[in-house]
Image (cartoon, rainbow, N blue to C red; front, side):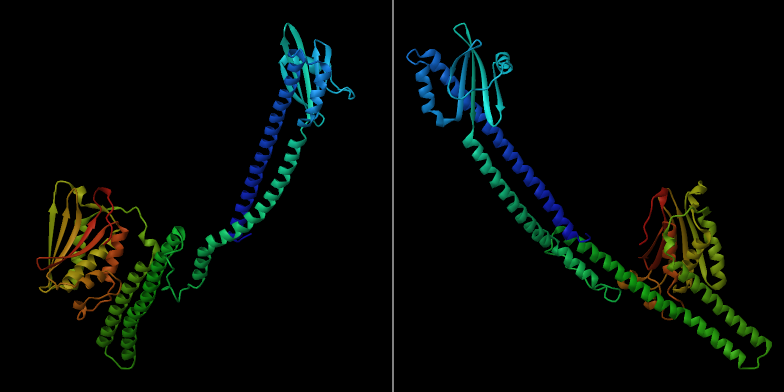
Length: 460
């Protein structure tokens, strides 16, 4: 039974059937005990009445008492009363019927005062009474004809109620469960319509019950994330193809041009240098793409300890070979008494790549061909700040500045792939650091901040 609706319906129906049977059995046996107790009391009262008439009313003799008993016999069907004084029987209600009794029953009545028991289909009461220094034992027996008829009638009524209740209960449970499960069936039907080609479909979130609505809302959120992921993947493939095509096309053009002409050695060398530059560019783009597409990159790793200032000075040397006319000012802000404040756990090649990109970016977009880099190290902060006098970005450009392949309006005249800042953001994630953009008194500021004292800082 794979259907949830059928399993719920059968489960609830079985529980209802069992509980109904238990409830009816409790009613039946409770009424049976009540009938028996009530009949025992009536039989006891009848026996005591007979005993009192026999022993306390002088005008009533044995023959008259039998007449009285016979005239009231219809009150208890097949009633028989025997009275003993000591072990001698002094009264029996019916002469022509031999009453069966045993001495053990009389002994038990004497021991307990009174007992209730059955003899065949009849109920029997035995009582032992002391009166006027004499011992009397009374046996009263009768068949509860009307009480047993009521029990038989009750039994048939309960059978009818049980089977009718089972039929009605199972039917009602099936339709109730069907109605309750209907929103899930609708949700299932809508889910089957969703595929990679129509991730824009959203499920109904209202009027289906709190649980189903919550499930639909969570699924819609998942669809939103999937749609974004598919969109990013699609854009990534598109832009990656575009970025890789550019250096490849240039390399093919340089090679065709060199092969189609008879060149001097210097011209061949120049062509090879051009090819080398394009190959380096292609390698850089490829490495950046691999790093950005690696889903395992955002896992925590145990990095060695490195000094921020030494790593930064290495980056400055590398970038200044590319921008020999540029000016890079490096400042250190913090307590020089503790070298430990300058240490961070880092993957040195990756962190160097991030600093190279940020420094290169600062020089490329600087109006005065100058960049200011500050290493700030205190108990509460470890950060490397890159500043330049560049153009301000719009709010939309700031929102997209760390998106792969995105290039702001001020980058139209500068060669690039739009991967530099996205790569910096990914490297920041690797190191549980943050990268922020801001404007401060005409300066463009990129702040690469590390977690201080083991606290995680999220990437913005």
